[in-house]
Image (cartoon, rainbow, N blue to C red; front, side, top):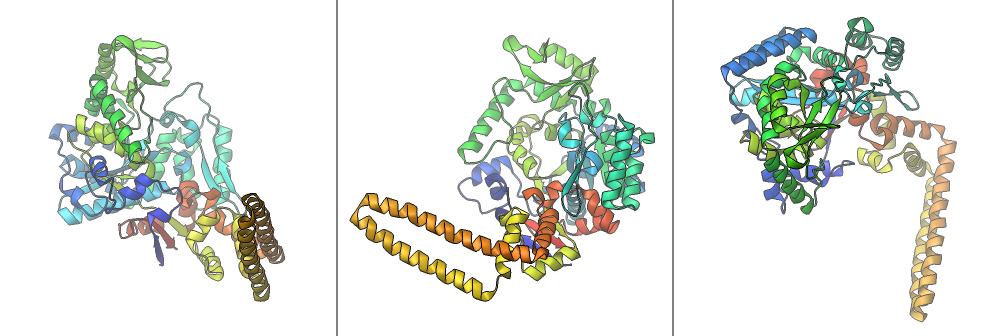
Length: 546
C-alpha cells in the first residue's frame, strides 16, 4: 500500500499553535510551548511516568468499567484489559463526542492511534498500557452530534434524527428512538448510502428502536464492536459512580475557583501575545463547571456572582451548597472543556491523551489546571491525521498527475475542473496564450513606467487600465479552460468525484465523511490498517492509498 506524508504546515486549516507544537525546532515560543506541553509529541518519554492509583480506586474503576462493558456488548479482549487496569496497567486515552452513527472518520483515527500508542508503549517500557475511549456524553451541543455526512455520487448527504429536547440536556442520554419512524427511515437511508451488508447490520444492532439506545449507548456499542479485537475499553463517565471517582477535580474547581481563573486568564494572554489563539474564551466570573438542574436535568453553566455566590440559570448557590451536591449527587456537576481532561485523569491512570487539533489547543490552557489540581500535566499526543484514497480515485489522481496540495489549493470542484481543463488544452493554444500573456505583461510594464515618469497621476491611471487588461487576459485563459471542461465532460466528473471524496466541502475528509462509509467498503480489515499506520513516522498528514 502506498503512503504519502505531507508536513502539517501545508494542510488547510492548520493553526500556528498546532504547527509549532508538532515542530520540535519551533524557536521564539519554545519556552511557552514547553510549559503548555511538558512532553514532546513524538518518542516514548511520556510512557515512563504514568501515574499510580490506589488499589481501592482501581477496584472501583474496574467494577464500573465491567458494568459498562456489558452494556456496550464488549468482548473478552476488553474484559481482559479492564482486569489489567485493575492490577496496575496504565491507560492511553482518547475520546470524542457521541455523534450519530459514529460520526466522522476522525473517530476511527483517534481510536486507532490510542490502540497503537498503547501497544508501542507496552513494548517500549514493559509496563502494560491499555487503550481507553472516553465518550464525551455530557456536552449539550446537540446540533453538533445529531448528524452524519455520507457521500452520494454527486453530493454530501447529511442525515439527522432531528432530536429536539425542550431544554439543553446532556446529549449522551437522549434516546435515539424519540421518533421511531424517523430513526427507522434514517437507518434505512444510511444503509442505502453505505450499501447493505455487515456494517449496515451493525448500525441496526447498535441503534435499533427495540434496543432503546441513547446516543451514548449506540456510539459506545459501535466503537466497541469495530475495535473489539484490540480490547478498546469504552467509558461513559456521566454516571454517579464515575463522577464520585472524579470528585477531587470537581471539588478543586469549586474551592480553588479564583486561583484557577487567574491562572487561566494569564495563560490565555500568554497565548495571544505569542501569536496563538486561546481555544476557550475565559472571562472574569468564569467557572469550569456546569450544573444539571435537579428537576429538569438541564445543563446550565455555573458562574460566580458577587459575595461568593454562584448562579446557574436563575438559581443561586453558595459554595457550601455546591459542595453538598458534590457529596450527595456528584453526577449533577459536569466539567467544561478545559476541566474535562483533568476530571478524566483523576479517574484513569492516564499515561497520555491522544488529541485532535482542537483538543491540543485546549491542553495549552488546561495545563495550568493540571498543575494546580494534579501537580503534573498529562502528555498530549497527536492523533493520526489521514485521508483514505480508494483505488478508483487513485487512478483518477494518477491519470491527471494531481498531487494532494493541488486539491487543497483548488478548494472546489469547479476550480479543480478548470485546472484540469487548462491541462487538457492543445499545446498550440497554450503556447499562444502564454506568448500573448507574456507580451502583454512586457509591453504594459514598459508603458506604465514611461507614463508614470511623465506624471504620477497618469501613472496611476495607466496602472488601473493595465490591471483591467491583465484581468481580461486571465479571463480569456479561463474561458479557454472552461471550453475544454465542457468539451471533456469527464473532466468535470473527475473533479467532482475527487473533491467530494477527498476534500469534501473544502475540509479534510476525516472531518466530514462518516467513518461507517469506509467500514462498509473495507470491512474488518480497516481498523487493523489504521492501527498499523498510526505510528508517528509522519508528523503531519498521511494519505493512504487503499
